[in-house]
Image (tube, rainbow over all chains, first blue to last red; front, side):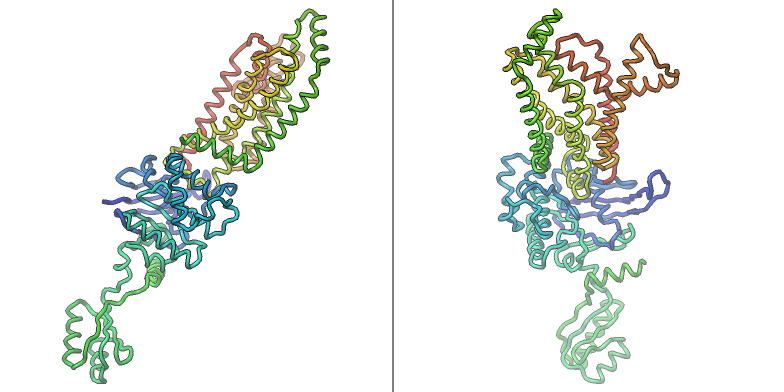
Length: 308
Length: 275
């Protein structure tokens, strides 16, 4: 079942009040997010990531196309009962304590006092903020505010959670803890929609990603698919002799990395099997054959550079 | 539930920003001044004056006293101070990072606006109830005459505030600036609506000294009709306290219409605005 469905979503903003000029924030964006997935939305600054999330949450209105959450249009207020949201640069009233922030936004989410009494400290504990619940948030650090924001997003036990830069300002240990919380939520069957600049983190926890650039979707798929270079294989072997190396270089257009490793560009699995046959016939042992993978970061940079 | 959350939120904000403390401190000062100002001789003097003119006794003296307490200038000071205090509520709500959170909750935009409006009105009602309620008790204890009609001034003042606060909501939404909201609203309250009130009284009077051109008169009458009539409502409050008949309910009706229009435009604008 798709939790998020986006079809040809377009958003134009007026560049100036009363002028006819339009800025294209999003242009014909389409993708779906399935139940229980951790989905990452990537893109450089100004790509339209936050605008997309705001449209899904009914904070901004779409110009054209369709956007649905749980099979209901995003304009349906009731669908928000199933949603939690942590915005980028969120501002909680700084005269409140951590506990009061959770209670205030919990009440706005429709929770009753009885539910809040039971769950406020449960979620503060999950994000490691239970000892700070009675402290005014103006004394919190950036990282603590992010953790509180995450607790706020989880308070109504939503099925879908939107997180915009959730680890912004959080130290490495805190980031690991937040990742663990997100993975735990995934285990519980929650769907998580993540906006982040930290591609290494996205790579660690996301099932699928979409890459936006200048308002257009340029790539979408599983992290595995996106980071895998389809036609490049890495062979690890026992020691290669000179004759085999020469043949690999000349006939198979390989790149040899020392005596025990080489990479080959191939046209398909038939080519891979031919190389395997050749190596084995040369009396060399094959230790491993793997498709080459790029980091999400290098893939992302390559894609953006190509499009620009 | 949502309304309760907004009311609680606004009271917490008022408490945290020491707004409530300032209001109640200021009001307590007024109450103390009234305690010292109303002496037995003041009341007796008033009573004797009225008796000598055959215009009534103790009852009328108390009403006159109470009418003075909630006359035009105190009304303006009280309502204006409340408008200043509450003018930051909407611009604060619209701050980036906060409005996103509010709009992501399962509450319609209409309820958000109405929730803020009602929460502000409740805050002011409680404050006026505290001030005018205690003044009523003091005056009644000191004079021995309990004029329950004086308590209507709490409702009238809250109503005057509500009418003007509806414009605060709209200007706050459009400008996102507390300062601009305060300036525009205070200008509408005083001098604009006050001058229009005086102009209308002049047009209705039989003796006309100054000659207005037909166009100027039409413009002034038009402005008088469309703008809130806080000063006429204060007159109506006075009539309630002194148990005199109200000449016309038209100022109340047109002010309520103004409030309805302001709130409707606010809701319409908020419902179509991207944040």
